[in-house]
Amino acid sequence: MAQVAADKNLSASLQGFGRLNVLRQMGLLVGLAASIAIGVALALWSQEPGFRMLYSGLADKDLLEMTTALESSGIPYKLSEGAGTIMVPGKLVHEARLNLAGQGLPNGTGMGFELLDKEQGFGVSQFMENARYQHALEGELARSIMGLSTIKSARVHLAIPKQTAFLRDRDRKEPSASVMLNLYTGRVIEEGQVASIVHLVASSVPSLSPSKVTVVDQTGKLLSGSDSSRSMQLTATQFDHQRKLEEYYIKRIESILSPIMGTNAVRAQVVTEMDFSVTEQAQESFNPDLPAIRSEQTMEDQSSGATRAAGVPGAVSNQPRGATSEANAGQNGVPQNATRRVTRNYELDRTVSHTQLPTGVVRRLSVAVVIDDRLSADEEGQPIREPRSEEEITRITSLVKEAVGFSAQRGDSVNVINASFAIPPEMEPLPEPGLLDKPWLSDVLKMGLAALGVLLMVFGVLKPVMRRLAENSPPPTASTAMIPAGAGGEAMMAPAGMAGLNEAPMQLDQQQPQGQLPAPNNYEQQLSTVKTMVGQDPKRVAQVVKTWVGNDG
Image (cartoon, rainbow, N blue to C red; front, side):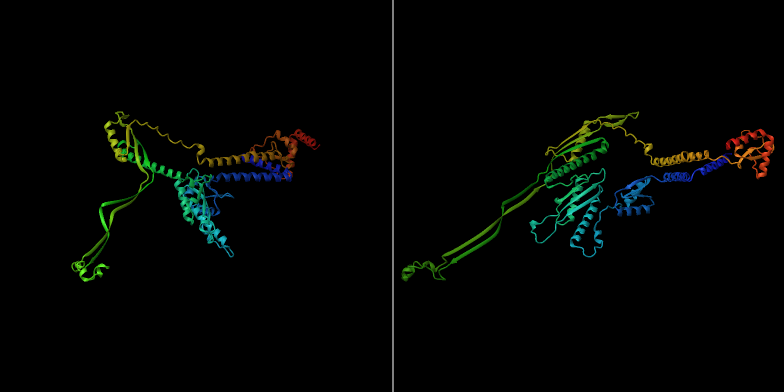
Protein backbone atom coordinates (compact mmCIF):
# COMPACT_ATOMS: atom_id res chain seq x y z
CA MET A 1 0.00 0.00 0.00
CA ALA A 2 2.89 2.39 0.80
CA GLN A 3 4.34 1.81 -2.66
CA VAL A 4 0.93 2.51 -4.26
CA ALA A 5 0.64 5.77 -2.26
CA ALA A 6 4.15 6.84 -3.27
CA ASP A 7 3.36 6.16 -6.91
CA LYS A 8 0.18 8.22 -6.64
CA ASN A 9 2.08 11.13 -5.01
CA LEU A 10 4.74 11.00 -7.73
CA SER A 11 2.09 10.92 -10.44
CA ALA A 12 0.33 13.89 -8.82
CA SER A 13 3.59 15.82 -8.58
CA LEU A 14 4.32 15.21 -12.21
CA GLN A 15 0.84 16.39 -13.17
CA GLY A 16 1.34 19.54 -11.07
CA PHE A 17 4.70 20.16 -12.71
CA GLY A 18 3.00 19.89 -16.09
CA ARG A 19 0.56 22.69 -15.22
CA LEU A 20 3.38 25.19 -14.56
CA ASN A 21 4.64 27.52 -17.26
CA VAL A 22 8.00 27.04 -18.93
CA LEU A 23 9.82 29.67 -16.84
CA ARG A 24 8.71 28.14 -13.56
CA GLN A 25 9.55 24.69 -14.79
CA MET A 26 13.09 25.80 -15.66
CA GLY A 27 13.51 27.52 -12.27
CA LEU A 28 12.24 24.42 -10.49
CA LEU A 29 14.64 22.17 -12.42
CA VAL A 30 17.58 24.48 -11.67
CA GLY A 31 16.67 24.56 -7.98
CA LEU A 32 16.41 20.79 -7.80
CA ALA A 33 19.73 20.36 -9.61
CA ALA A 34 21.41 22.87 -7.29
CA SER A 35 19.99 21.11 -4.24
CA ILE A 36 21.26 17.77 -5.44
CA ALA A 37 24.70 19.25 -6.25
CA ILE A 38 24.93 20.88 -2.83
CA GLY A 39 24.00 17.60 -1.16
CA VAL A 40 26.64 15.71 -3.13
CA ALA A 41 29.25 18.39 -2.37
CA LEU A 42 28.46 18.20 1.35
CA ALA A 43 28.81 14.43 1.27
CA LEU A 44 32.18 14.63 -0.49
CA TRP A 45 33.36 17.41 1.84
CA SER A 46 32.55 15.31 4.88
CA GLN A 47 34.70 12.49 3.52
CA GLU A 48 37.78 14.69 3.02
CA PRO A 49 40.30 14.72 5.91
CA GLY A 50 40.97 17.95 7.77
CA PHE A 51 44.07 19.67 6.37
CA ARG A 52 46.52 21.66 8.50
CA MET A 53 49.39 23.92 7.52
CA LEU A 54 52.75 22.16 7.21
CA TYR A 55 55.01 25.04 6.07
CA SER A 56 54.36 28.54 4.78
CA GLY A 57 56.35 31.25 3.02
CA LEU A 58 58.26 28.77 0.86
CA ALA A 59 59.97 29.52 -2.43
CA ASP A 60 59.00 27.76 -5.62
CA LYS A 61 62.11 25.59 -5.55
CA ASP A 62 61.37 24.42 -2.01
CA LEU A 63 57.73 23.80 -2.93
CA LEU A 64 58.78 21.57 -5.81
CA GLU A 65 61.22 19.56 -3.70
CA MET A 66 58.79 19.17 -0.79
CA THR A 67 55.83 18.13 -2.94
CA THR A 68 58.02 15.55 -4.66
CA ALA A 69 59.10 14.19 -1.28
CA LEU A 70 55.49 14.05 -0.04
CA GLU A 71 54.36 12.21 -3.16
CA SER A 72 57.14 9.64 -2.74
CA SER A 73 56.07 9.16 0.90
CA GLY A 74 52.39 8.71 -0.05
CA ILE A 75 51.20 11.69 2.00
CA PRO A 76 48.35 13.75 0.45
CA TYR A 77 48.86 17.50 0.33
CA LYS A 78 47.27 20.74 -0.84
CA LEU A 79 48.88 23.97 -2.02
CA SER A 80 47.63 27.43 -1.13
CA GLU A 81 47.73 29.80 -4.07
CA GLY A 82 50.08 32.75 -3.81
CA ALA A 83 51.24 32.08 -0.24
CA GLY A 84 53.80 29.30 -0.63
CA THR A 85 51.90 27.15 1.88
CA ILE A 86 51.67 23.36 1.96
CA MET A 87 48.82 21.70 3.84
CA VAL A 88 48.56 18.03 4.81
CA PRO A 89 45.98 16.02 6.82
CA GLY A 90 46.04 16.98 10.48
CA LYS A 91 46.96 13.52 11.73
CA LEU A 92 49.94 13.34 9.34
CA VAL A 93 51.55 16.73 10.13
CA HIS A 94 54.23 15.38 12.47
CA GLU A 95 54.98 12.40 10.24
CA ALA A 96 55.36 14.67 7.20
CA ARG A 97 57.70 17.03 9.05
CA LEU A 98 59.89 14.15 10.21
CA ASN A 99 60.09 12.74 6.69
CA LEU A 100 61.01 16.12 5.22
CA ALA A 101 63.55 16.83 7.96
CA GLY A 102 65.21 13.49 7.24
CA GLN A 103 65.72 14.64 3.65
CA GLY A 104 67.01 18.08 4.68
CA LEU A 105 63.90 19.99 3.60
CA PRO A 106 63.21 22.84 3.48
CA ASN A 107 66.78 23.82 2.71
CA GLY A 108 66.28 27.60 2.56
CA THR A 109 65.45 30.14 -0.07
CA GLY A 110 68.87 31.66 -0.73
CA MET A 111 70.74 31.17 -3.97
CA GLY A 112 74.44 30.46 -3.72
CA PHE A 113 77.20 29.85 -6.21
CA GLU A 114 74.73 28.08 -8.50
CA LEU A 115 74.05 31.57 -9.83
CA LEU A 116 77.43 31.41 -11.54
CA ASP A 117 76.39 28.26 -13.41
CA LYS A 118 73.73 30.13 -15.36
CA GLU A 119 74.51 31.29 -18.84
CA GLN A 120 75.42 34.95 -18.84
CA GLY A 121 75.34 35.48 -22.55
CA PHE A 122 77.38 37.95 -24.54
CA GLY A 123 77.97 41.53 -23.62
CA VAL A 124 77.89 41.15 -19.84
CA SER A 125 79.91 43.90 -18.18
CA GLN A 126 82.50 43.44 -15.48
CA PHE A 127 80.23 45.27 -13.04
CA MET A 128 77.44 42.71 -13.53
CA GLU A 129 79.87 39.84 -13.07
CA ASN A 130 81.14 41.32 -9.80
CA ALA A 131 77.59 41.96 -8.62
CA ARG A 132 76.57 38.39 -9.41
CA TYR A 133 79.58 37.01 -7.59
CA GLN A 134 78.85 39.17 -4.54
CA HIS A 135 75.21 38.06 -4.53
CA ALA A 136 76.29 34.42 -4.75
CA LEU A 137 78.69 34.92 -1.84
CA GLU A 138 75.91 36.46 0.23
CA GLY A 139 73.67 33.48 -0.50
CA GLU A 140 76.35 30.99 0.53
CA LEU A 141 76.95 32.86 3.79
CA ALA A 142 73.20 32.93 4.50
CA ARG A 143 73.01 29.17 3.95
CA SER A 144 75.88 28.57 6.33
CA ILE A 145 74.28 30.74 9.01
CA MET A 146 70.93 28.97 8.63
CA GLY A 147 72.69 25.76 9.61
CA LEU A 148 72.37 26.85 13.25
CA SER A 149 69.44 25.23 15.00
CA THR A 150 67.97 28.47 16.39
CA ILE A 151 67.91 30.38 13.08
CA LYS A 152 64.97 30.03 10.73
CA SER A 153 66.31 32.23 7.94
CA ALA A 154 69.12 34.73 7.40
CA ARG A 155 70.14 37.43 4.97
CA VAL A 156 73.65 38.79 4.46
CA HIS A 157 74.57 42.12 2.87
CA LEU A 158 78.16 42.82 1.93
CA ALA A 159 79.55 46.29 1.27
CA ILE A 160 82.83 45.71 -0.54
CA PRO A 161 84.50 48.89 -1.86
CA LYS A 162 86.09 48.88 -5.26
CA GLN A 163 89.80 48.18 -5.11
CA THR A 164 92.18 50.24 -7.22
CA ALA A 165 95.94 50.66 -7.38
CA PHE A 166 95.75 54.46 -7.59
CA LEU A 167 94.62 54.92 -3.99
CA ARG A 168 96.99 55.12 -1.08
CA ASP A 169 96.64 52.65 1.74
CA ARG A 170 95.37 55.28 4.13
CA ASP A 171 92.67 56.30 1.62
CA ARG A 172 91.32 52.77 1.14
CA LYS A 173 87.94 51.93 2.66
CA GLU A 174 87.50 48.71 4.57
CA PRO A 175 84.67 46.33 3.63
CA SER A 176 81.72 45.85 5.97
CA ALA A 177 78.84 43.41 6.34
CA SER A 178 75.41 43.24 7.96
CA VAL A 179 73.48 40.08 8.89
CA MET A 180 69.71 39.89 9.41
CA LEU A 181 68.56 36.87 11.46
CA ASN A 182 65.04 35.46 11.69
CA LEU A 183 64.86 33.25 14.77
CA TYR A 184 62.36 30.49 15.44
CA THR A 185 59.49 31.36 17.76
CA GLY A 186 60.55 30.97 21.38
CA ARG A 187 64.25 30.55 20.55
CA VAL A 188 67.02 32.79 21.92
CA ILE A 189 70.45 33.10 20.33
CA GLU A 190 73.44 33.11 22.66
CA GLU A 191 76.35 35.52 22.62
CA GLY A 192 78.73 32.76 21.61
CA GLN A 193 76.62 31.99 18.56
CA VAL A 194 76.57 35.67 17.61
CA ALA A 195 80.36 35.80 17.89
CA SER A 196 80.66 32.70 15.71
CA ILE A 197 78.45 34.31 13.03
CA VAL A 198 80.56 37.47 13.12
CA HIS A 199 83.83 35.58 12.69
CA LEU A 200 82.29 33.33 10.03
CA VAL A 201 81.38 36.32 7.88
CA ALA A 202 84.66 38.11 8.59
CA SER A 203 86.70 35.06 7.63
CA SER A 204 84.82 34.64 4.34
CA VAL A 205 85.48 38.12 2.98
CA PRO A 206 89.04 39.37 2.37
CA SER A 207 90.21 42.29 4.55
CA LEU A 208 86.95 42.24 6.55
CA SER A 209 87.42 42.93 10.25
CA PRO A 210 85.04 41.36 12.80
CA SER A 211 84.38 44.84 14.18
CA LYS A 212 82.83 45.77 10.81
CA VAL A 213 80.16 43.04 10.99
CA THR A 214 76.73 43.99 12.37
CA VAL A 215 74.18 41.37 13.40
CA VAL A 216 70.50 42.12 14.15
CA ASP A 217 67.42 39.94 14.65
CA GLN A 218 63.91 40.20 13.22
CA THR A 219 62.84 42.60 15.99
CA GLY A 220 65.64 45.05 15.18
CA LYS A 221 67.69 44.21 18.26
CA LEU A 222 71.44 44.70 17.85
CA LEU A 223 73.16 41.41 18.71
CA SER A 224 76.79 42.25 17.92
CA GLY A 225 78.68 44.66 20.20
CA SER A 226 80.40 47.84 19.08
CA ASP A 227 83.89 49.08 19.92
CA SER A 228 82.59 51.17 22.81
CA SER A 229 81.25 48.10 24.59
CA ARG A 230 84.43 46.01 24.48
CA SER A 231 85.03 46.61 28.18
CA MET A 232 81.52 45.38 28.95
CA GLN A 233 82.09 42.32 26.80
CA LEU A 234 85.28 41.59 28.71
CA THR A 235 83.38 41.96 31.99
CA ALA A 236 80.65 39.60 30.78
CA THR A 237 83.29 37.07 29.75
CA GLN A 238 84.92 37.27 33.16
CA PHE A 239 81.59 36.83 34.90
CA ASP A 240 80.81 33.84 32.72
CA HIS A 241 84.17 32.29 33.60
CA GLN A 242 83.54 32.87 37.30
CA ARG A 243 80.07 31.34 37.09
CA LYS A 244 81.38 28.25 35.30
CA LEU A 245 84.08 27.82 37.96
CA GLU A 246 81.50 28.04 40.75
CA GLU A 247 79.29 25.49 39.00
CA TYR A 248 82.32 23.24 38.68
CA TYR A 249 82.95 23.38 42.44
CA ILE A 250 79.26 22.76 43.21
CA LYS A 251 79.22 19.74 40.95
CA ARG A 252 82.29 18.30 42.66
CA ILE A 253 80.72 18.74 46.11
CA GLU A 254 77.40 17.17 45.14
CA SER A 255 79.04 14.30 43.26
CA ILE A 256 81.10 13.30 46.33
CA LEU A 257 78.24 13.66 48.86
CA SER A 258 75.25 12.37 46.85
CA PRO A 259 76.23 8.67 47.10
CA ILE A 260 76.42 9.07 50.89
CA MET A 261 73.47 11.37 51.65
CA GLY A 262 71.19 10.70 48.73
CA THR A 263 70.48 12.42 45.45
CA ASN A 264 68.17 15.12 46.82
CA ALA A 265 69.73 15.41 50.28
CA VAL A 266 72.58 17.83 49.45
CA ARG A 267 72.52 21.48 48.43
CA ALA A 268 75.73 23.44 47.91
CA GLN A 269 76.69 26.95 46.86
CA VAL A 270 80.16 28.35 46.16
CA VAL A 271 81.28 31.96 45.87
CA THR A 272 84.67 32.69 44.33
CA GLU A 273 86.66 35.89 44.57
CA MET A 274 88.85 36.11 41.48
CA ASP A 275 91.55 38.45 40.25
CA PHE A 276 91.35 39.21 36.55
CA SER A 277 94.14 41.80 36.49
CA VAL A 278 96.85 41.27 33.89
CA THR A 279 100.42 41.59 35.27
CA GLU A 280 103.69 41.42 33.37
CA GLN A 281 107.19 41.46 34.99
CA ALA A 282 110.64 41.92 33.44
CA GLN A 283 113.72 41.17 35.66
CA GLU A 284 117.46 41.22 35.03
CA SER A 285 119.83 39.85 37.78
CA PHE A 286 123.63 39.40 38.05
CA ASN A 287 125.55 36.81 40.09
CA PRO A 288 129.02 38.13 41.07
CA ASP A 289 130.08 34.78 42.52
CA LEU A 290 130.30 33.17 39.10
CA PRO A 291 132.55 35.41 36.94
CA ALA A 292 133.68 34.20 33.54
CA ILE A 293 136.51 35.54 31.32
CA ARG A 294 134.98 36.84 28.16
CA SER A 295 138.26 38.05 26.43
CA GLU A 296 141.98 38.54 27.29
CA GLN A 297 144.78 40.55 25.52
CA THR A 298 148.52 40.41 26.54
CA MET A 299 151.34 42.75 25.26
CA GLU A 300 155.12 42.34 26.20
CA ASP A 301 158.08 44.68 25.20
CA GLN A 302 161.81 43.91 26.07
CA SER A 303 165.06 45.86 25.07
CA SER A 304 168.88 45.06 25.55
CA GLY A 305 172.22 47.14 24.95
CA ALA A 306 174.33 44.22 23.50
CA THR A 307 172.43 43.85 20.40
CA ARG A 308 171.82 47.34 19.27
CA ALA A 309 172.93 50.88 19.86
CA ALA A 310 171.67 52.51 22.93
CA GLY A 311 171.84 55.77 24.52
CA VAL A 312 170.08 58.98 24.63
CA PRO A 313 170.71 61.19 21.67
CA GLY A 314 172.03 64.49 22.69
CA ALA A 315 175.08 66.09 24.34
CA VAL A 316 176.25 63.02 26.27
CA SER A 317 176.57 60.91 23.21
CA ASN A 318 178.62 63.54 21.47
CA GLN A 319 181.21 63.71 24.19
CA PRO A 320 184.60 61.93 23.93
CA ARG A 321 184.78 58.19 24.49
CA GLY A 322 186.35 58.34 27.89
CA ALA A 323 183.73 60.64 29.16
CA THR A 324 180.86 58.44 28.15
CA SER A 325 182.16 55.05 29.22
CA GLU A 326 180.59 55.20 32.62
CA ALA A 327 177.26 56.24 31.27
CA ASN A 328 177.11 53.34 28.85
CA ALA A 329 178.47 50.75 31.22
CA GLY A 330 175.10 49.27 31.86
CA GLN A 331 174.36 48.71 28.21
CA ASN A 332 176.79 45.86 27.75
CA GLY A 333 174.99 43.55 30.25
CA VAL A 334 171.42 42.18 30.52
CA PRO A 335 168.43 44.04 29.03
CA GLN A 336 167.80 47.09 30.95
CA ASN A 337 164.06 47.70 29.79
CA ALA A 338 161.09 45.18 29.88
CA THR A 339 157.31 45.99 29.45
CA ARG A 340 154.22 43.63 29.92
CA ARG A 341 150.61 44.72 29.39
CA VAL A 342 147.56 42.40 29.91
CA THR A 343 143.86 43.33 29.24
CA ARG A 344 141.08 40.95 30.49
CA ASN A 345 137.26 41.32 30.03
CA TYR A 346 135.00 39.44 32.51
CA GLU A 347 131.32 38.42 31.93
CA LEU A 348 129.16 38.25 35.00
CA ASP A 349 126.32 35.63 35.39
CA ARG A 350 123.20 37.57 34.28
CA THR A 351 119.58 36.39 34.26
CA VAL A 352 116.85 38.22 32.27
CA SER A 353 113.24 37.04 32.90
CA HIS A 354 109.94 38.24 31.42
CA THR A 355 106.93 36.95 33.38
CA GLN A 356 103.22 37.37 32.63
CA LEU A 357 101.11 36.35 35.61
CA PRO A 358 97.96 34.33 34.83
CA THR A 359 94.60 36.11 34.90
CA GLY A 360 91.54 34.78 36.67
CA VAL A 361 93.34 33.66 39.81
CA VAL A 362 91.16 32.50 42.69
CA ARG A 363 91.75 34.73 45.67
CA ARG A 364 89.24 33.24 48.08
CA LEU A 365 86.55 30.53 48.27
CA SER A 366 83.37 30.62 50.33
CA VAL A 367 81.53 27.29 50.45
CA ALA A 368 78.09 26.68 52.01
CA VAL A 369 76.63 23.16 52.21
CA VAL A 370 73.25 22.07 53.59
CA ILE A 371 72.51 18.38 54.18
CA ASP A 372 69.16 16.81 54.93
CA ASP A 373 68.26 14.73 57.98
CA ARG A 374 68.75 11.01 57.98
CA LEU A 375 65.55 9.27 56.85
CA SER A 376 64.38 5.97 58.28
CA ALA A 377 61.11 4.06 58.64
CA ASP A 378 59.33 2.81 61.77
CA GLU A 379 57.53 -0.46 62.20
CA GLU A 380 54.45 0.88 60.42
CA GLY A 381 56.51 2.13 57.49
CA GLN A 382 56.14 5.82 58.34
CA PRO A 383 59.21 8.00 57.59
CA ILE A 384 61.29 9.18 60.54
CA ARG A 385 63.76 12.07 60.39
CA GLU A 386 66.89 12.00 62.53
CA PRO A 387 69.39 14.89 62.70
CA ARG A 388 73.01 14.30 61.76
CA SER A 389 75.60 13.96 64.50
CA GLU A 390 78.46 16.39 65.02
CA GLU A 391 80.98 13.72 64.11
CA GLU A 392 79.25 13.12 60.79
CA ILE A 393 79.11 16.84 60.03
CA THR A 394 82.85 17.08 60.78
CA ARG A 395 83.62 14.25 58.36
CA ILE A 396 81.46 15.87 55.69
CA THR A 397 83.27 19.18 56.21
CA SER A 398 86.61 17.46 55.68
CA LEU A 399 85.33 15.89 52.44
CA VAL A 400 84.10 19.27 51.17
CA LYS A 401 87.47 20.91 51.92
CA GLU A 402 89.31 18.25 49.98
CA ALA A 403 86.85 18.48 47.07
CA VAL A 404 87.28 22.24 46.57
CA GLY A 405 91.01 22.45 47.38
CA PHE A 406 90.66 24.34 50.65
CA SER A 407 93.55 26.71 51.45
CA ALA A 408 93.81 28.44 54.80
CA GLN A 409 96.42 30.87 53.43
CA ARG A 410 93.90 32.29 50.98
CA GLY A 411 91.32 32.65 53.75
CA ASP A 412 88.87 30.06 52.37
CA SER A 413 85.81 29.22 54.46
CA VAL A 414 83.61 26.10 54.48
CA ASN A 415 80.31 25.94 56.38
CA VAL A 416 78.31 22.70 56.57
CA ILE A 417 74.98 22.60 58.45
CA ASN A 418 72.18 20.09 58.91
CA ALA A 419 68.55 21.04 58.26
CA SER A 420 65.27 19.35 57.45
CA PHE A 421 64.38 19.68 53.79
CA ALA A 422 60.79 20.45 52.85
CA ILE A 423 59.01 17.54 51.20
CA PRO A 424 58.06 18.56 47.66
CA PRO A 425 54.39 18.08 46.77
CA GLU A 426 53.48 15.16 44.60
CA MET A 427 53.19 15.83 40.93
CA GLU A 428 49.63 15.94 39.73
CA PRO A 429 48.90 13.80 36.71
CA LEU A 430 48.58 15.64 33.45
CA PRO A 431 44.96 16.35 32.56
CA GLU A 432 43.57 14.29 29.77
CA PRO A 433 42.79 16.23 26.62
CA GLY A 434 39.24 17.46 26.48
CA LEU A 435 36.67 16.57 23.90
CA LEU A 436 37.46 19.65 21.85
CA ASP A 437 41.12 18.59 21.63
CA LYS A 438 40.38 15.16 20.17
CA PRO A 439 41.82 14.80 16.66
CA TRP A 440 38.77 12.96 15.37
CA LEU A 441 36.34 15.64 16.50
CA SER A 442 36.76 17.75 13.36
CA ASP A 443 36.01 14.80 11.08
CA VAL A 444 32.91 13.88 13.08
CA LEU A 445 31.66 17.48 13.01
CA LYS A 446 32.18 17.64 9.27
CA MET A 447 30.21 14.46 8.71
CA GLY A 448 27.45 15.67 11.05
CA LEU A 449 27.21 19.03 9.30
CA ALA A 450 27.11 17.32 5.91
CA ALA A 451 24.33 14.97 7.06
CA LEU A 452 22.38 17.89 8.52
CA GLY A 453 22.76 19.83 5.28
CA VAL A 454 21.49 16.91 3.22
CA LEU A 455 18.49 16.45 5.53
CA LEU A 456 17.66 20.14 5.32
CA MET A 457 17.83 19.99 1.53
CA VAL A 458 15.56 16.96 1.40
CA PHE A 459 12.97 17.93 4.02
CA GLY A 460 13.26 21.70 3.71
CA VAL A 461 13.41 22.10 -0.06
CA LEU A 462 12.61 18.98 -2.04
CA LYS A 463 9.71 17.70 0.06
CA PRO A 464 7.83 21.04 0.23
CA VAL A 465 8.26 21.53 -3.51
CA MET A 466 6.93 18.07 -4.29
CA ARG A 467 4.04 18.62 -1.89
CA ARG A 468 3.16 21.93 -3.51
CA LEU A 469 3.18 20.31 -6.94
CA ALA A 470 0.93 17.53 -5.67
CA GLU A 471 -1.57 20.02 -4.24
CA ASN A 472 -1.67 21.99 -7.50
CA SER A 473 -2.20 18.88 -9.68
CA PRO A 474 -5.13 19.01 -12.14
CA PRO A 475 -8.40 17.10 -11.30
CA PRO A 476 -8.89 13.70 -12.97
CA THR A 477 -10.55 13.76 -16.40
CA ALA A 478 -13.79 12.03 -17.34
CA SER A 479 -11.92 9.17 -18.92
CA THR A 480 -9.85 8.45 -15.81
CA ALA A 481 -12.29 8.91 -12.89
CA MET A 482 -13.38 5.57 -11.52
CA ILE A 483 -16.57 5.09 -9.57
CA PRO A 484 -17.09 1.86 -7.69
CA ALA A 485 -20.12 -0.12 -8.85
CA GLY A 486 -22.70 -1.96 -6.89
CA ALA A 487 -23.85 -5.53 -6.74
CA GLY A 488 -22.71 -6.39 -10.20
CA GLY A 489 -19.15 -6.53 -8.90
CA GLU A 490 -17.89 -4.13 -11.60
CA ALA A 491 -16.34 -0.68 -11.64
CA MET A 492 -17.30 2.05 -14.08
CA MET A 493 -15.52 5.07 -15.43
CA ALA A 494 -17.39 8.37 -15.09
CA PRO A 495 -16.76 11.98 -15.83
CA ALA A 496 -15.06 14.14 -13.27
CA GLY A 497 -18.34 15.41 -11.93
CA MET A 498 -19.41 11.93 -10.89
CA ALA A 499 -16.60 11.81 -8.38
CA GLY A 500 -19.20 12.80 -5.81
CA LEU A 501 -20.54 9.30 -6.05
CA ASN A 502 -17.44 8.13 -4.20
CA GLU A 503 -18.87 9.55 -0.99
CA ALA A 504 -21.18 6.57 -0.77
CA PRO A 505 -19.48 3.75 -2.65
CA MET A 506 -21.58 0.77 -3.52
CA GLN A 507 -20.86 -2.67 -2.27
CA LEU A 508 -18.72 -4.74 -4.56
CA ASP A 509 -19.46 -8.25 -5.59
CA GLN A 510 -18.20 -10.95 -3.24
CA GLN A 511 -15.94 -12.29 -5.96
CA GLN A 512 -14.12 -8.95 -6.40
CA PRO A 513 -11.06 -8.65 -4.04
CA GLN A 514 -11.26 -5.78 -1.63
CA GLY A 515 -9.22 -2.73 -2.57
CA GLN A 516 -9.06 -3.55 -6.30
CA LEU A 517 -11.26 -1.83 -8.87
CA PRO A 518 -11.68 -3.29 -12.33
CA ALA A 519 -10.93 -0.80 -15.06
CA PRO A 520 -13.19 -0.86 -18.14
CA ASN A 521 -11.41 -1.58 -21.33
CA ASN A 522 -13.71 -0.02 -23.98
CA TYR A 523 -16.47 2.46 -24.46
CA GLU A 524 -19.28 -0.14 -24.65
CA GLN A 525 -18.41 -1.53 -21.28
CA GLN A 526 -18.33 1.97 -19.77
CA LEU A 527 -21.71 2.77 -21.27
CA SER A 528 -23.17 -0.48 -19.91
CA THR A 529 -21.83 0.33 -16.46
CA VAL A 530 -23.41 3.80 -16.50
CA LYS A 531 -26.76 2.36 -17.56
CA THR A 532 -26.64 -0.10 -14.71
CA MET A 533 -26.02 2.72 -12.22
CA VAL A 534 -28.94 4.72 -13.66
CA GLY A 535 -31.23 1.76 -13.18
CA GLN A 536 -30.09 1.05 -9.63
CA ASP A 537 -29.88 4.60 -8.24
CA PRO A 538 -31.57 7.16 -10.52
CA LYS A 539 -31.62 9.83 -7.81
CA ARG A 540 -27.85 9.87 -7.42
CA VAL A 541 -27.37 9.97 -11.17
CA ALA A 542 -29.76 12.89 -11.42
CA GLN A 543 -27.79 14.68 -8.70
CA VAL A 544 -24.57 14.13 -10.63
CA VAL A 545 -26.06 15.50 -13.82
CA LYS A 546 -27.34 18.53 -11.94
CA THR A 547 -23.80 19.07 -10.61
CA TRP A 548 -22.41 18.92 -14.15
CA VAL A 549 -24.84 21.55 -15.32
CA GLY A 550 -24.05 23.79 -12.38
CA ASN A 551 -20.27 23.50 -12.92
CA ASP A 552 -20.49 24.21 -16.63
CA GLY A 553 -22.51 27.34 -15.88
